[in-house]
Image (cartoon, rainbow, N blue to C red; front, side):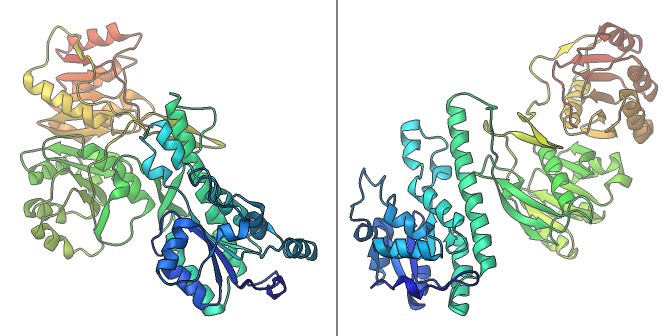
Length: 523
């Protein structure tokens, strides 16, 4: 039996849930929530599928049809879209609204529990005629109506919220102002994310990679202890709906909470290590490699990567593209390391790392850039969007531009260094030899400066090594500096107005040079 409107608790303050409207696609936990509501004295108003599930659980349910006087029509497209439903949700606690609702025989709803058709999970790759059937109309409208009227109505749109909400009204007899405000904020975020997914789907259907308006939705995974610096707050989000597999799918096995900077470094480290098909190790510090190598074993690869710059490797992030075994774990354990990410860890490796309680271990699937991925970079007042840089070793059409062609060994090292260069901050120079970096020059405002840094790091190891440059050489001074260091072959995009001068310099020094035609800036 409906309770009279005069029994409502006035605002401001805590509201008592006397009537709840429940209509959900995902029925996880809904019976328990409804049972808690009923035990607290609330009436339940529900739609077909949800109502059937609640009645089967032995709970009393009032049907929407008995309130509206209309059955569900148009194959279920119209169920709750009726003034008797929305007036019950949108009416304010003032005398005029109370009198108007009473005159129409409408009892207010205090709590709306709705979740939406799973457009994000099922419609991404569906043809348009199937996708449109997964666009929720009534559910979105109910969520927005309840969130708009948050001062009087609670709104729950995610099964993850059920336990907290149920505990509060069972303990206190209602929902506080702070809870209702927070639920409303979550509700508007949910409908925004839902519309973002739909808009993205239709943009792809029309072939527009970068439409006039774009809304990107992300769901929080965790707060970070702080941002880049202790005075900055931070959090880690994943794309919603989820894209291709990536670091957001990682499982942390041990260690303290990841920091903001850890996550930035892990993204670069895991991307670099996963770029190789043979056993590989990458050591990242401040979002750029300080060592990378391939080898017959992970232990060999890690040792070679560490030799590049052991000073910078201290406190770094390590990524390995194979399950970490005991020998590799023993080698890494000798150096202070913040985080290790890999596809897995052997029992022996886990035992070795257990002794380092602060060391974070992450198991993650290899990252992959899907066709819908987009990179976002924030600037003040806006964002920049671009396709991800997914170029690899030899580019589309590499060509030798010098009289001397690279030896087979040099070509292998050039391809290796070219992969690494894609993950080094620009201007980027990588010296490589024997499948390992021996010197890296990163983030410099001029290219010759990057060459000189790589040469200083490499020292005598540069003699007989090769060099990769993420972009063309604007002057021959970079080639001259490389020659003084002992570099024998170079890979670079080409495309400078002084290309002929650069080629002549390489020829003069007896170097082989490959142009890839592809640039790999990483700002």
